Length: 168
Image 1 (tube, rainbow, N blue to C red):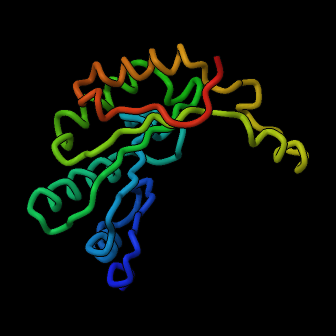
Image 2: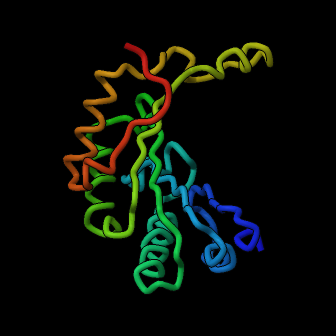
């Protein structure tokens, strides 16, 4: 496999997949980049079209498999900071509580991925409208407020980071 050739492997996932798929790939995965977008199931359904129940159940199961040393992957939780959707104090604090209370012992890092509108030109070239075109890159001050709200949930703030392009 890839590991025999010194290749590090990663799975970037929304977590919305049958458990059997994870059973096949995770024994060969060094890093799991796992999206937790919205903690409230109704908001999750509203913005993504599906409930978050399977997503949360899968990450709980993966965490248990790591605790039992069946998988040796490192988990990085990733939350996109989308204006008027995921980027609220309530949502981030709720995700923080979930992580701290249920999977925090096996989560190495939590990344809050800053929104930016750099794709707007692609939409313009395709003559398509984008519902988030009115928003600008996340300001550093707002990013810090959101990071503090996330940390208030109880996850280790030393392993909580804002990534991406920020404006002043």
